[in-house]
Length: 85
Image (tube, rainbow, N blue to C red; front, side, top):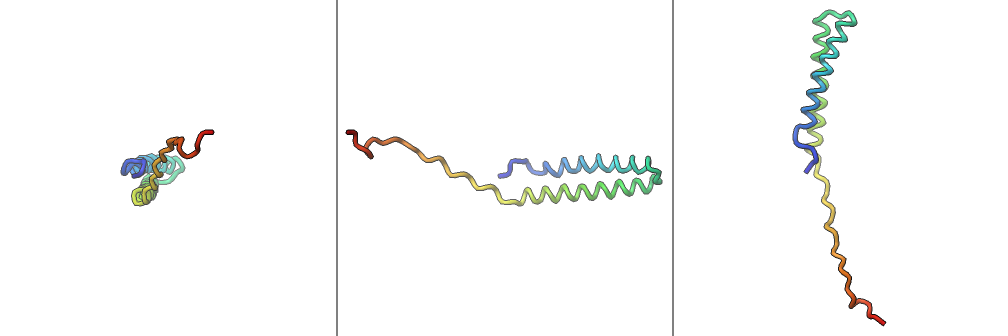
């Protein structure tokens, strides 16, 4: 079992992609690009980052679980092994 709930990376990846798309559109218009070109750049950024996020989520979800550590051994002292002098 993985430590993360399913789709955690994808959810935050989509949020990051949305923030990056808004920033790309805003910075594109500030740099003098026409609005339609800045919007296309923002859409491309959103699709690219979302694809990376879902790819990372797929890797995490399909990875094999970590092996469980062996249970601790029961160390009970037994006085019969070594006789008292």
